[in-house]
Image (cartoon, rainbow, N blue to C red; front, side, top):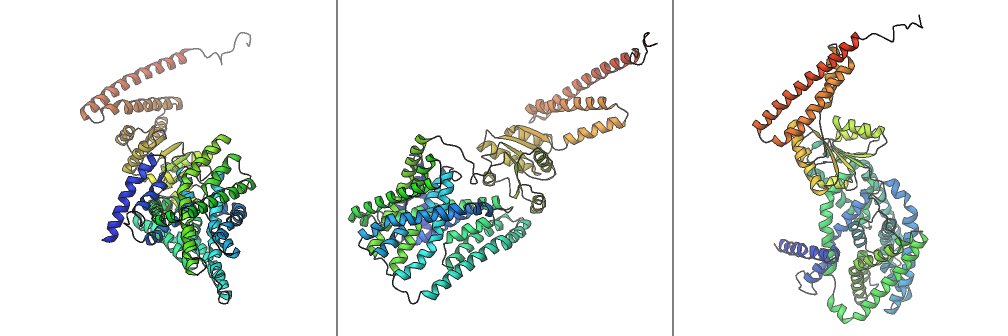
Length: 609
Protein backbone atom coordinates (compact mmCIF):
# COMPACT_ATOMS: atom_id res chain seq x y z
CA UNK A 1 0.00 0.00 0.00
CA UNK A 2 2.89 2.35 0.69
CA UNK A 3 4.07 1.91 -2.92
CA UNK A 4 0.63 2.66 -4.38
CA UNK A 5 0.24 5.65 -2.07
CA UNK A 6 3.56 7.14 -3.17
CA UNK A 7 2.86 6.40 -6.85
CA UNK A 8 -0.56 8.09 -6.63
CA UNK A 9 0.89 11.24 -5.06
CA UNK A 10 3.75 11.41 -7.58
CA UNK A 11 1.41 11.04 -10.54
CA UNK A 12 -1.06 13.54 -9.14
CA UNK A 13 1.65 16.14 -8.52
CA UNK A 14 3.06 15.61 -12.03
CA UNK A 15 -0.40 16.01 -13.59
CA UNK A 16 -0.69 19.44 -11.94
CA UNK A 17 2.88 20.72 -12.22
CA UNK A 18 3.91 19.65 -15.72
CA UNK A 19 1.02 21.26 -17.67
CA UNK A 20 1.45 24.39 -15.52
CA UNK A 21 5.14 24.66 -16.35
CA UNK A 22 4.39 23.98 -20.02
CA UNK A 23 1.82 26.76 -20.02
CA UNK A 24 4.35 29.13 -18.44
CA UNK A 25 6.79 28.23 -21.22
CA UNK A 26 9.29 26.58 -18.85
CA UNK A 27 9.05 23.06 -20.31
CA UNK A 28 8.02 19.69 -18.91
CA UNK A 29 11.47 18.85 -17.53
CA UNK A 30 11.45 21.75 -15.07
CA UNK A 31 7.94 20.72 -14.04
CA UNK A 32 9.15 17.22 -13.16
CA UNK A 33 12.18 18.64 -11.31
CA UNK A 34 9.94 20.94 -9.30
CA UNK A 35 7.71 18.01 -8.27
CA UNK A 36 10.75 16.03 -7.17
CA UNK A 37 12.24 18.94 -5.23
CA UNK A 38 8.94 19.58 -3.46
CA UNK A 39 8.29 15.95 -2.50
CA UNK A 40 11.92 15.05 -1.76
CA UNK A 41 13.74 14.98 1.57
CA UNK A 42 14.77 18.63 1.34
CA UNK A 43 11.22 20.10 1.45
CA UNK A 44 8.22 17.94 2.37
CA UNK A 45 10.11 14.70 2.90
CA UNK A 46 7.35 12.62 1.29
CA UNK A 47 9.99 10.36 -0.30
CA UNK A 48 12.71 9.57 2.20
CA UNK A 49 15.00 7.54 -0.12
CA UNK A 50 15.11 9.09 -3.62
CA UNK A 51 17.97 6.77 -4.59
CA UNK A 52 15.54 3.87 -4.95
CA UNK A 53 13.24 5.90 -7.18
CA UNK A 54 16.21 7.10 -9.23
CA UNK A 55 17.49 3.56 -9.76
CA UNK A 56 14.07 2.30 -10.88
CA UNK A 57 13.36 5.31 -13.09
CA UNK A 58 16.64 4.82 -14.99
CA UNK A 59 14.63 2.43 -17.13
CA UNK A 60 13.06 5.55 -18.65
CA UNK A 61 16.48 6.50 -20.03
CA UNK A 62 16.94 2.89 -21.14
CA UNK A 63 13.69 2.94 -23.11
CA UNK A 64 14.53 6.33 -24.59
CA UNK A 65 17.79 4.90 -25.96
CA UNK A 66 15.93 1.86 -27.33
CA UNK A 67 13.55 4.13 -29.27
CA UNK A 68 16.48 6.19 -30.55
CA UNK A 69 18.11 2.94 -31.66
CA UNK A 70 14.97 2.03 -33.63
CA UNK A 71 15.49 5.22 -35.64
CA UNK A 72 19.09 4.26 -36.46
CA UNK A 73 19.57 1.51 -39.01
CA UNK A 74 23.02 -0.15 -38.75
CA UNK A 75 24.16 1.37 -42.04
CA UNK A 76 23.27 4.85 -40.83
CA UNK A 77 25.02 4.27 -37.50
CA UNK A 78 28.14 3.16 -39.34
CA UNK A 79 27.99 6.37 -41.35
CA UNK A 80 28.14 8.34 -38.06
CA UNK A 81 31.33 6.62 -36.83
CA UNK A 82 33.55 9.68 -37.39
CA UNK A 83 31.18 11.88 -35.41
CA UNK A 84 30.74 9.21 -32.76
CA UNK A 85 34.41 8.55 -31.97
CA UNK A 86 36.12 11.67 -33.29
CA UNK A 87 33.87 14.41 -31.92
CA UNK A 88 32.90 12.40 -28.85
CA UNK A 89 36.51 11.81 -27.81
CA UNK A 90 37.43 15.44 -28.51
CA UNK A 91 34.58 16.70 -26.31
CA UNK A 92 35.34 14.31 -23.45
CA UNK A 93 39.10 15.02 -23.30
CA UNK A 94 38.74 18.76 -23.91
CA UNK A 95 36.09 19.19 -21.23
CA UNK A 96 38.05 16.95 -18.84
CA UNK A 97 41.13 19.17 -19.16
CA UNK A 98 39.21 22.42 -18.57
CA UNK A 99 37.31 20.91 -15.63
CA UNK A 100 40.43 19.60 -13.88
CA UNK A 101 40.93 22.90 -11.94
CA UNK A 102 37.63 22.26 -10.13
CA UNK A 103 39.14 19.15 -8.53
CA UNK A 104 42.34 21.01 -7.65
CA UNK A 105 40.28 23.77 -6.02
CA UNK A 106 38.52 21.13 -3.92
CA UNK A 107 41.89 19.92 -2.61
CA UNK A 108 42.32 16.78 -4.76
CA UNK A 109 45.62 15.59 -6.17
CA UNK A 110 46.12 16.24 -9.84
CA UNK A 111 45.42 12.59 -10.76
CA UNK A 112 42.10 12.61 -8.91
CA UNK A 113 41.33 16.08 -10.27
CA UNK A 114 41.72 14.73 -13.83
CA UNK A 115 39.36 11.86 -12.98
CA UNK A 116 36.79 14.28 -11.55
CA UNK A 117 37.13 16.44 -14.66
CA UNK A 118 36.40 13.46 -16.91
CA UNK A 119 33.38 12.51 -14.80
CA UNK A 120 31.98 16.06 -14.95
CA UNK A 121 32.61 16.12 -18.73
CA UNK A 122 29.70 13.69 -19.19
CA UNK A 123 26.36 15.19 -20.23
CA UNK A 124 22.78 14.13 -19.60
CA UNK A 125 21.43 11.88 -22.34
CA UNK A 126 17.93 12.08 -20.86
CA UNK A 127 17.79 15.89 -20.63
CA UNK A 128 19.36 16.57 -24.02
CA UNK A 129 17.35 14.03 -26.02
CA UNK A 130 14.11 14.99 -24.28
CA UNK A 131 14.63 18.64 -25.23
CA UNK A 132 15.54 17.71 -28.81
CA UNK A 133 12.51 15.42 -29.08
CA UNK A 134 10.11 18.01 -27.65
CA UNK A 135 11.26 20.62 -30.16
CA UNK A 136 11.60 18.13 -33.07
CA UNK A 137 15.28 18.94 -33.54
CA UNK A 138 16.82 15.49 -33.29
CA UNK A 139 17.21 15.38 -37.07
CA UNK A 140 19.05 18.71 -37.27
CA UNK A 141 22.83 18.88 -37.66
CA UNK A 142 23.28 19.91 -34.02
CA UNK A 143 20.83 17.19 -32.94
CA UNK A 144 22.76 14.46 -34.75
CA UNK A 145 26.09 15.78 -33.47
CA UNK A 146 24.76 15.96 -29.91
CA UNK A 147 23.47 12.41 -30.19
CA UNK A 148 26.86 11.15 -31.40
CA UNK A 149 28.65 12.83 -28.49
CA UNK A 150 26.13 11.49 -25.95
CA UNK A 151 26.43 7.97 -27.30
CA UNK A 152 30.22 8.12 -27.03
CA UNK A 153 29.86 9.33 -23.44
CA UNK A 154 27.70 6.29 -22.65
CA UNK A 155 30.55 4.15 -23.98
CA UNK A 156 33.07 6.13 -21.93
CA UNK A 157 31.29 5.24 -18.68
CA UNK A 158 32.71 1.71 -19.00
CA UNK A 159 36.43 2.57 -18.80
CA UNK A 160 35.78 5.27 -16.19
CA UNK A 161 34.16 2.71 -13.90
CA UNK A 162 37.04 0.32 -14.56
CA UNK A 163 39.59 3.01 -13.61
CA UNK A 164 38.13 3.70 -10.16
CA UNK A 165 39.97 0.80 -8.41
CA UNK A 166 43.23 1.97 -9.99
CA UNK A 167 42.79 5.45 -8.50
CA UNK A 168 41.93 3.82 -5.17
CA UNK A 169 45.39 2.25 -5.20
CA UNK A 170 44.19 -1.34 -5.72
CA UNK A 171 46.61 -2.06 -8.57
CA UNK A 172 47.63 -5.60 -7.62
CA UNK A 173 44.22 -7.20 -7.92
CA UNK A 174 43.15 -5.21 -10.96
CA UNK A 175 45.52 -6.42 -13.69
CA UNK A 176 44.02 -9.69 -14.91
CA UNK A 177 40.55 -8.80 -13.61
CA UNK A 178 40.47 -5.69 -15.81
CA UNK A 179 41.17 -7.72 -18.94
CA UNK A 180 38.57 -10.26 -17.85
CA UNK A 181 35.96 -7.52 -17.46
CA UNK A 182 36.81 -6.09 -20.88
CA UNK A 183 36.52 -9.53 -22.47
CA UNK A 184 33.19 -10.12 -20.77
CA UNK A 185 31.89 -6.76 -21.96
CA UNK A 186 32.94 -7.37 -25.59
CA UNK A 187 31.40 -10.85 -25.48
CA UNK A 188 28.10 -9.49 -24.19
CA UNK A 189 27.98 -6.84 -26.93
CA UNK A 190 28.55 -9.48 -29.62
CA UNK A 191 25.95 -11.76 -28.04
CA UNK A 192 23.42 -8.90 -27.95
CA UNK A 193 24.06 -8.19 -31.63
CA UNK A 194 23.53 -11.85 -32.60
CA UNK A 195 20.40 -12.15 -30.43
CA UNK A 196 18.86 -8.91 -31.65
CA UNK A 197 19.72 -9.55 -35.29
CA UNK A 198 19.05 -13.26 -35.76
CA UNK A 199 17.01 -14.67 -32.89
CA UNK A 200 14.53 -12.09 -31.64
CA UNK A 201 13.01 -11.13 -35.05
CA UNK A 202 11.99 -14.78 -35.46
CA UNK A 203 10.41 -14.74 -32.00
CA UNK A 204 8.48 -11.59 -32.91
CA UNK A 205 7.30 -13.26 -36.13
CA UNK A 206 5.83 -16.17 -34.16
CA UNK A 207 4.09 -13.78 -31.76
CA UNK A 208 2.75 -11.66 -34.63
CA UNK A 209 1.21 -14.74 -36.27
CA UNK A 210 -0.60 -15.54 -33.02
CA UNK A 211 -2.49 -12.24 -33.28
CA UNK A 212 -2.32 -11.59 -29.50
CA UNK A 213 -1.36 -7.93 -29.28
CA UNK A 214 -0.62 -7.78 -25.55
CA UNK A 215 1.95 -10.57 -25.91
CA UNK A 216 3.72 -8.52 -28.57
CA UNK A 217 3.86 -5.61 -26.12
CA UNK A 218 5.21 -7.94 -23.44
CA UNK A 219 7.87 -9.19 -25.87
CA UNK A 220 8.97 -5.62 -26.62
CA UNK A 221 9.32 -4.83 -22.92
CA UNK A 222 11.16 -8.11 -22.33
CA UNK A 223 13.70 -7.30 -25.03
CA UNK A 224 14.47 -3.85 -23.62
CA UNK A 225 14.70 -4.95 -19.99
CA UNK A 226 16.64 -8.15 -20.73
CA UNK A 227 19.30 -6.39 -22.81
CA UNK A 228 19.61 -3.64 -20.21
CA UNK A 229 20.06 -6.07 -17.33
CA UNK A 230 22.51 -8.28 -19.22
CA UNK A 231 24.62 -5.26 -20.11
CA UNK A 232 24.57 -4.07 -16.50
CA UNK A 233 25.72 -7.54 -15.39
CA UNK A 234 28.59 -7.27 -17.86
CA UNK A 235 29.62 -3.93 -16.37
CA UNK A 236 28.27 -1.89 -19.29
CA UNK A 237 25.65 0.83 -19.49
CA UNK A 238 22.04 -0.40 -19.46
CA UNK A 239 21.20 2.37 -21.92
CA UNK A 240 23.90 1.12 -24.29
CA UNK A 241 22.37 -2.37 -24.28
CA UNK A 242 18.92 -1.02 -25.06
CA UNK A 243 20.34 1.17 -27.83
CA UNK A 244 22.04 -1.83 -29.45
CA UNK A 245 18.77 -3.77 -29.29
CA UNK A 246 16.97 -0.91 -31.04
CA UNK A 247 19.60 -0.65 -33.76
CA UNK A 248 19.41 -4.40 -34.44
CA UNK A 249 15.63 -4.13 -34.98
CA UNK A 250 15.64 -0.78 -36.82
CA UNK A 251 15.41 -2.27 -40.32
CA UNK A 252 12.88 -5.00 -39.48
CA UNK A 253 9.16 -4.94 -40.22
CA UNK A 254 8.35 -4.51 -36.50
CA UNK A 255 9.96 -1.11 -36.07
CA UNK A 256 6.83 1.07 -35.84
CA UNK A 257 4.80 -1.43 -33.80
CA UNK A 258 7.65 -1.71 -31.27
CA UNK A 259 8.03 2.04 -31.07
CA UNK A 260 4.32 2.55 -30.45
CA UNK A 261 4.28 -0.11 -27.72
CA UNK A 262 7.33 1.22 -25.85
CA UNK A 263 6.60 4.95 -26.14
CA UNK A 264 4.02 5.20 -23.28
CA UNK A 265 6.28 3.36 -20.83
CA UNK A 266 9.24 5.51 -21.85
CA UNK A 267 7.34 8.73 -21.28
CA UNK A 268 6.13 7.80 -17.80
CA UNK A 269 9.46 6.39 -16.59
CA UNK A 270 11.47 9.27 -18.04
CA UNK A 271 9.23 11.72 -16.19
CA UNK A 272 9.80 9.69 -13.03
CA UNK A 273 13.56 9.92 -13.65
CA UNK A 274 13.42 13.72 -13.74
CA UNK A 275 11.33 13.69 -10.55
CA UNK A 276 13.96 11.49 -8.88
CA UNK A 277 16.71 13.91 -9.96
CA UNK A 278 14.79 16.74 -8.29
CA UNK A 279 14.44 14.63 -5.12
CA UNK A 280 18.19 14.07 -4.96
CA UNK A 281 18.89 17.80 -4.45
CA UNK A 282 20.12 18.37 -0.89
CA UNK A 283 18.97 21.93 -0.22
CA UNK A 284 20.64 22.03 3.21
CA UNK A 285 23.99 21.19 1.62
CA UNK A 286 23.41 23.75 -1.13
CA UNK A 287 22.58 26.54 1.33
CA UNK A 288 25.52 25.67 3.57
CA UNK A 289 27.94 25.62 0.62
CA UNK A 290 26.16 27.92 -1.81
CA UNK A 291 29.43 29.47 -3.00
CA UNK A 292 31.00 26.11 -3.82
CA UNK A 293 27.88 24.76 -5.56
CA UNK A 294 27.41 27.88 -7.67
CA UNK A 295 31.14 27.99 -8.47
CA UNK A 296 31.27 24.35 -9.58
CA UNK A 297 28.08 24.79 -11.62
CA UNK A 298 29.39 27.92 -13.34
CA UNK A 299 32.78 26.36 -14.02
CA UNK A 300 31.18 23.20 -15.40
CA UNK A 301 28.87 25.11 -17.76
CA UNK A 302 31.47 27.60 -18.99
CA UNK A 303 34.11 24.94 -19.63
CA UNK A 304 31.73 22.69 -21.56
CA UNK A 305 30.24 25.59 -23.54
CA UNK A 306 33.73 26.56 -24.70
CA UNK A 307 34.81 23.03 -25.62
CA UNK A 308 31.54 22.10 -27.36
CA UNK A 309 31.63 25.34 -29.34
CA UNK A 310 35.09 24.35 -30.60
CA UNK A 311 33.79 20.85 -31.35
CA UNK A 312 31.00 22.37 -33.45
CA UNK A 313 33.57 24.38 -35.40
CA UNK A 314 35.70 21.29 -35.97
CA UNK A 315 32.58 19.44 -37.19
CA UNK A 316 31.94 22.36 -39.60
CA UNK A 317 28.38 22.78 -38.46
CA UNK A 318 26.41 25.77 -39.80
CA UNK A 319 27.20 28.66 -37.51
CA UNK A 320 23.61 28.96 -36.23
CA UNK A 321 23.74 25.30 -35.14
CA UNK A 322 26.80 25.72 -32.90
CA UNK A 323 25.11 27.64 -30.02
CA UNK A 324 22.29 25.09 -30.04
CA UNK A 325 24.76 22.22 -29.80
CA UNK A 326 26.73 23.88 -27.00
CA UNK A 327 23.71 24.73 -24.85
CA UNK A 328 21.87 21.41 -25.19
CA UNK A 329 24.72 19.24 -23.80
CA UNK A 330 26.55 21.69 -21.50
CA UNK A 331 25.03 20.23 -18.33
CA UNK A 332 26.28 17.39 -16.17
CA UNK A 333 24.91 13.90 -16.71
CA UNK A 334 22.95 11.23 -14.89
CA UNK A 335 25.97 8.93 -15.04
CA UNK A 336 27.79 11.44 -12.84
CA UNK A 337 25.56 10.22 -9.99
CA UNK A 338 26.61 6.63 -10.65
CA UNK A 339 30.33 7.37 -11.01
CA UNK A 340 30.52 9.73 -8.03
CA UNK A 341 28.69 7.27 -5.79
CA UNK A 342 30.96 4.45 -6.97
CA UNK A 343 34.02 6.64 -6.35
CA UNK A 344 32.91 7.27 -2.76
CA UNK A 345 32.36 3.54 -2.22
CA UNK A 346 35.83 2.80 -3.62
CA UNK A 347 37.42 5.43 -1.35
CA UNK A 348 38.51 7.67 -4.25
CA UNK A 349 36.52 10.77 -3.19
CA UNK A 350 35.09 11.72 0.18
CA UNK A 351 31.34 12.19 0.60
CA UNK A 352 31.50 15.99 0.83
CA UNK A 353 33.16 16.41 -2.60
CA UNK A 354 30.73 13.96 -4.20
CA UNK A 355 27.71 15.70 -2.66
CA UNK A 356 28.86 19.14 -3.81
CA UNK A 357 29.41 17.86 -7.36
CA UNK A 358 26.05 16.05 -7.42
CA UNK A 359 24.29 19.25 -6.32
CA UNK A 360 26.12 21.23 -9.02
CA UNK A 361 25.28 18.65 -11.71
CA UNK A 362 21.60 18.72 -10.72
CA UNK A 363 21.57 22.52 -10.82
CA UNK A 364 23.17 22.46 -14.29
CA UNK A 365 20.40 20.10 -15.45
CA UNK A 366 17.74 22.47 -14.13
CA UNK A 367 19.36 25.34 -16.06
CA UNK A 368 19.50 23.39 -19.35
CA UNK A 369 16.04 24.39 -20.72
CA UNK A 370 16.90 28.07 -20.17
CA UNK A 371 20.32 27.64 -21.76
CA UNK A 372 18.88 25.87 -24.80
CA UNK A 373 16.25 28.55 -25.21
CA UNK A 374 19.01 31.16 -25.17
CA UNK A 375 20.99 29.12 -27.70
CA UNK A 376 17.97 29.03 -30.02
CA UNK A 377 17.53 32.79 -29.76
CA UNK A 378 21.19 33.38 -30.54
CA UNK A 379 20.98 30.97 -33.46
CA UNK A 380 17.91 32.77 -34.84
CA UNK A 381 19.89 36.02 -34.93
CA UNK A 382 22.78 34.35 -36.73
CA UNK A 383 20.79 32.75 -39.55
CA UNK A 384 17.46 31.36 -40.71
CA UNK A 385 16.14 28.13 -39.30
CA UNK A 386 15.70 25.27 -41.78
CA UNK A 387 13.02 22.61 -41.18
CA UNK A 388 14.26 19.05 -40.80
CA UNK A 389 12.42 15.76 -41.04
CA UNK A 390 12.25 13.13 -38.38
CA UNK A 391 14.39 9.98 -38.58
CA UNK A 392 17.76 11.81 -38.50
CA UNK A 393 17.25 13.65 -41.77
CA UNK A 394 15.82 10.74 -43.70
CA UNK A 395 13.19 11.88 -46.17
CA UNK A 396 9.70 10.96 -45.00
CA UNK A 397 7.59 9.42 -47.81
CA UNK A 398 4.69 11.69 -48.86
CA UNK A 399 2.12 8.87 -48.89
CA UNK A 400 1.09 6.59 -46.04
CA UNK A 401 -1.00 3.52 -46.94
CA UNK A 402 -3.02 1.84 -44.17
CA UNK A 403 -3.59 -1.73 -45.29
CA UNK A 404 -1.74 -3.42 -48.12
CA UNK A 405 -4.17 -6.11 -49.20
CA UNK A 406 -5.34 -6.52 -52.79
CA UNK A 407 -6.79 -3.00 -52.94
CA UNK A 408 -3.84 -1.26 -51.30
CA UNK A 409 -1.33 -3.21 -53.40
CA UNK A 410 -2.76 -1.75 -56.61
CA UNK A 411 -2.36 1.78 -55.27
CA UNK A 412 1.17 0.97 -54.09
CA UNK A 413 2.19 -0.47 -57.48
CA UNK A 414 0.98 2.63 -59.33
CA UNK A 415 2.91 4.88 -56.92
CA UNK A 416 6.03 2.75 -57.29
CA UNK A 417 5.90 2.88 -61.09
CA UNK A 418 5.62 6.67 -60.86
CA UNK A 419 8.64 6.86 -58.55
CA UNK A 420 6.58 8.09 -55.57
CA UNK A 421 7.78 6.72 -52.23
CA UNK A 422 5.31 5.50 -49.62
CA UNK A 423 5.13 3.78 -46.23
CA UNK A 424 2.62 0.95 -45.81
CA UNK A 425 1.27 -0.63 -42.62
CA UNK A 426 -0.45 -4.00 -42.41
CA UNK A 427 -1.25 -6.32 -39.44
CA UNK A 428 -0.80 -9.52 -41.47
CA UNK A 429 2.80 -10.62 -40.85
CA UNK A 430 2.71 -13.24 -43.64
CA UNK A 431 1.63 -10.57 -46.11
CA UNK A 432 4.25 -8.16 -44.82
CA UNK A 433 7.13 -10.64 -45.09
CA UNK A 434 6.11 -11.60 -48.64
CA UNK A 435 5.75 -8.04 -49.97
CA UNK A 436 8.94 -6.86 -48.25
CA UNK A 437 10.96 -9.25 -50.44
CA UNK A 438 10.26 -6.95 -53.38
CA UNK A 439 11.79 -3.93 -51.65
CA UNK A 440 8.57 -2.24 -50.57
CA UNK A 441 8.61 -0.11 -47.42
CA UNK A 442 5.98 -2.05 -45.48
CA UNK A 443 5.85 -2.67 -41.73
CA UNK A 444 3.94 -4.99 -39.44
CA UNK A 445 1.66 -2.67 -37.48
CA UNK A 446 -1.95 -1.98 -36.59
CA UNK A 447 -2.86 1.20 -38.48
CA UNK A 448 -5.98 1.70 -36.33
CA UNK A 449 -3.73 3.08 -33.55
CA UNK A 450 -2.83 6.77 -33.64
CA UNK A 451 0.56 6.19 -31.99
CA UNK A 452 1.48 3.73 -34.75
CA UNK A 453 0.45 6.19 -37.48
CA UNK A 454 2.51 8.93 -35.85
CA UNK A 455 5.50 6.63 -35.57
CA UNK A 456 5.18 5.84 -39.29
CA UNK A 457 5.40 9.54 -40.17
CA UNK A 458 1.76 10.65 -40.42
CA UNK A 459 2.64 14.18 -39.29
CA UNK A 460 5.03 14.57 -42.23
CA UNK A 461 2.90 12.80 -44.86
CA UNK A 462 0.97 14.68 -47.54
CA UNK A 463 -1.70 12.05 -48.12
CA UNK A 464 -3.17 9.04 -46.33
CA UNK A 465 -4.75 6.12 -48.19
CA UNK A 466 -7.10 4.02 -46.02
CA UNK A 467 -7.22 0.62 -47.73
CA UNK A 468 -7.94 -1.71 -44.81
CA UNK A 469 -10.45 -4.55 -45.28
CA UNK A 470 -12.37 -4.01 -42.04
CA UNK A 471 -15.10 -1.34 -42.25
CA UNK A 472 -14.91 -0.34 -38.57
CA UNK A 473 -11.12 -0.09 -38.71
CA UNK A 474 -11.39 2.24 -41.71
CA UNK A 475 -13.87 4.45 -39.85
CA UNK A 476 -11.68 4.46 -36.74
CA UNK A 477 -8.62 5.54 -38.72
CA UNK A 478 -10.57 8.23 -40.55
CA UNK A 479 -11.96 9.70 -37.30
CA UNK A 480 -8.55 9.74 -35.58
CA UNK A 481 -6.83 11.40 -38.51
CA UNK A 482 -9.57 13.99 -39.01
CA UNK A 483 -9.49 14.89 -35.29
CA UNK A 484 -5.71 15.18 -34.98
CA UNK A 485 -4.63 16.11 -38.54
CA UNK A 486 -7.57 18.01 -40.10
CA UNK A 487 -5.44 19.43 -42.94
CA UNK A 488 -4.17 16.05 -44.18
CA UNK A 489 -5.66 14.70 -47.43
CA UNK A 490 -7.40 11.36 -46.81
CA UNK A 491 -8.50 8.93 -49.53
CA UNK A 492 -10.45 5.89 -48.37
CA UNK A 493 -11.68 2.57 -49.70
CA UNK A 494 -15.40 1.97 -49.02
CA UNK A 495 -17.03 -1.45 -48.79
CA UNK A 496 -20.41 -0.26 -50.09
CA UNK A 497 -22.65 2.77 -50.44
CA UNK A 498 -23.55 2.92 -46.74
CA UNK A 499 -19.86 2.68 -45.75
CA UNK A 500 -19.06 5.44 -48.25
CA UNK A 501 -21.65 7.72 -46.60
CA UNK A 502 -20.09 7.07 -43.19
CA UNK A 503 -16.65 8.02 -44.48
CA UNK A 504 -18.06 11.13 -46.17
CA UNK A 505 -19.71 12.07 -42.88
CA UNK A 506 -16.32 11.97 -41.15
CA UNK A 507 -14.88 14.28 -43.80
CA UNK A 508 -12.74 12.00 -45.98
CA UNK A 509 -11.59 13.89 -49.08
CA UNK A 510 -12.21 11.10 -51.60
CA UNK A 511 -14.14 7.82 -51.24
CA UNK A 512 -13.77 4.95 -53.71
CA UNK A 513 -16.13 1.98 -53.54
CA UNK A 514 -13.98 -1.12 -53.81
CA UNK A 515 -15.95 -3.02 -56.52
CA UNK A 516 -17.44 -0.04 -58.36
CA UNK A 517 -14.63 0.60 -60.84
CA UNK A 518 -14.19 -3.09 -61.68
CA UNK A 519 -17.94 -3.54 -62.21
CA UNK A 520 -17.98 -0.57 -64.58
CA UNK A 521 -15.13 -2.10 -66.56
CA UNK A 522 -17.03 -5.42 -66.72
CA UNK A 523 -20.15 -3.58 -67.93
CA UNK A 524 -18.22 -2.18 -70.88
CA UNK A 525 -17.13 -5.67 -71.87
CA UNK A 526 -20.70 -7.03 -71.48
CA UNK A 527 -22.12 -4.35 -73.79
CA UNK A 528 -19.40 -4.98 -76.35
CA UNK A 529 -20.19 -8.70 -76.15
CA UNK A 530 -23.82 -7.89 -77.00
CA UNK A 531 -22.74 -6.14 -80.19
CA UNK A 532 -22.39 -2.54 -79.03
CA UNK A 533 -19.63 -0.59 -80.77
CA UNK A 534 -16.75 0.11 -78.39
CA UNK A 535 -17.37 3.86 -78.23
CA UNK A 536 -21.08 3.38 -77.54
CA UNK A 537 -20.36 0.92 -74.74
CA UNK A 538 -17.88 3.33 -73.15
CA UNK A 539 -20.31 6.25 -73.41
CA UNK A 540 -23.15 4.25 -71.87
CA UNK A 541 -21.07 3.11 -68.90
CA UNK A 542 -19.53 6.55 -68.45
CA UNK A 543 -23.01 8.08 -68.33
CA UNK A 544 -24.12 5.60 -65.69
CA UNK A 545 -20.93 6.08 -63.65
CA UNK A 546 -21.38 9.85 -63.56
CA UNK A 547 -25.04 9.44 -62.66
CA UNK A 548 -24.32 7.00 -59.83
CA UNK A 549 -21.60 9.22 -58.36
CA UNK A 550 -23.99 12.17 -58.44
CA UNK A 551 -26.67 10.01 -56.84
CA UNK A 552 -24.25 8.97 -54.09
CA UNK A 553 -23.56 12.63 -53.31
CA UNK A 554 -27.18 13.83 -53.56
CA UNK A 555 -28.64 10.97 -51.49
CA UNK A 556 -26.04 11.64 -48.75
CA UNK A 557 -28.38 14.23 -47.19
CA UNK A 558 -31.17 11.60 -46.86
CA UNK A 559 -28.95 8.77 -45.60
CA UNK A 560 -30.76 8.56 -42.25
CA UNK A 561 -34.31 8.80 -43.70
CA UNK A 562 -35.15 5.58 -45.54
CA UNK A 563 -38.39 6.90 -47.11
CA UNK A 564 -36.79 10.10 -48.36
CA UNK A 565 -33.81 8.11 -49.56
CA UNK A 566 -35.96 5.70 -51.60
CA UNK A 567 -38.01 8.57 -53.05
CA UNK A 568 -34.84 10.47 -54.02
CA UNK A 569 -33.37 7.41 -55.70
CA UNK A 570 -36.62 6.68 -57.63
CA UNK A 571 -36.77 10.26 -58.90
CA UNK A 572 -33.10 10.20 -59.84
CA UNK A 573 -33.50 6.86 -61.64
CA UNK A 574 -36.52 8.12 -63.61
CA UNK A 575 -34.59 11.23 -64.60
CA UNK A 576 -31.63 9.12 -65.60
CA UNK A 577 -33.77 6.84 -67.79
CA UNK A 578 -35.32 9.84 -69.55
CA UNK A 579 -31.93 11.40 -70.21
CA UNK A 580 -30.52 8.06 -71.32
CA UNK A 581 -33.38 7.53 -73.84
CA UNK A 582 -32.96 11.05 -75.18
CA UNK A 583 -29.25 10.42 -75.55
CA UNK A 584 -29.92 7.18 -77.46
CA UNK A 585 -32.43 8.91 -79.78
CA UNK A 586 -29.96 11.71 -80.51
CA UNK A 587 -27.20 9.19 -81.15
CA UNK A 588 -29.55 7.10 -83.35
CA UNK A 589 -30.55 10.16 -85.37
CA UNK A 590 -26.94 11.11 -85.93
CA UNK A 591 -26.08 7.56 -87.00
CA UNK A 592 -29.07 7.46 -89.42
CA UNK A 593 -28.11 10.78 -90.99
CA UNK A 594 -24.56 9.59 -91.31
CA UNK A 595 -25.74 6.43 -93.10
CA UNK A 596 -27.94 8.48 -95.52
CA UNK A 597 -25.17 10.92 -96.40
CA UNK A 598 -23.06 10.14 -99.55
CA UNK A 599 -19.69 8.66 -98.91
CA UNK A 600 -17.58 11.47 -100.27
CA UNK A 601 -14.39 9.78 -99.29
CA UNK A 602 -15.08 6.77 -101.57
CA UNK A 603 -16.96 8.52 -104.39
CA UNK A 604 -14.57 9.67 -107.12
CA UNK A 605 -14.84 13.30 -108.31
CA UNK A 606 -15.17 14.34 -111.96
CA UNK A 607 -11.51 15.28 -112.01
CA UNK A 608 -10.51 11.84 -110.75
CA UNK A 609 -12.69 10.18 -113.41
